[in-house]
Amino acid sequence: MSPSDRTSSSTKCIDTQTKHKEVIMTLNKRSDTTYSLPHRQHNKSWKFRNKDIYGHSKEEEEAIHLQKLKTTVRREYERRLTYPTRIQWRYFTRTVSDRVNDTAQMLQAWYINLKTAIAANEERPIVAIGTG
Image (cartoon, rainbow, N blue to C red; front, side, top):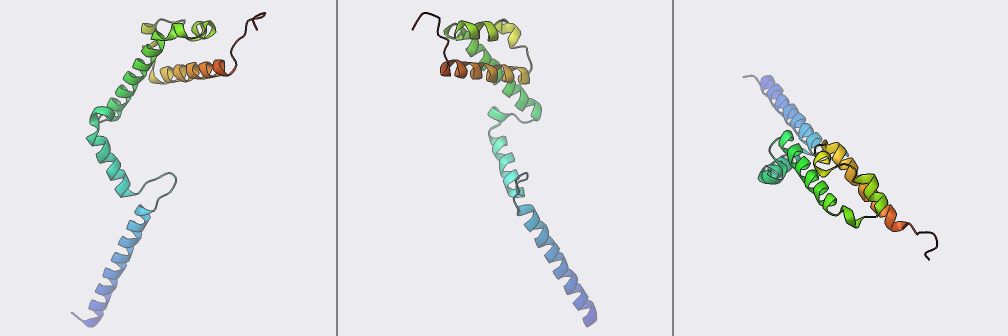
């Protein structure tokens, strides 16, 4: 092996090491939309350890989320008589069995709207004319 071959070989090695460092530095940089590789791996292992909560696949995660929403909706239906009549008429016209057959997005929207209406009612309760 000639000295020039050794030089080109060591230069190639240094270039490869430099490129490797650049790739690692690029992977480790955090931005608003991406996480570093070690963080993603940690998140995956954390979710795997908590499989009972999150499930193993996207479908399982969605099924668990839907089940939690259905439980929340049933709980709100049990409390419906504690809400003002206006809220009962607006948000509890369907039966609970019919309501829980909706999609997760519909249940989430219904629940958010219900909580918003309850909060708005607490801020501005209806006062009947001649009582106060």
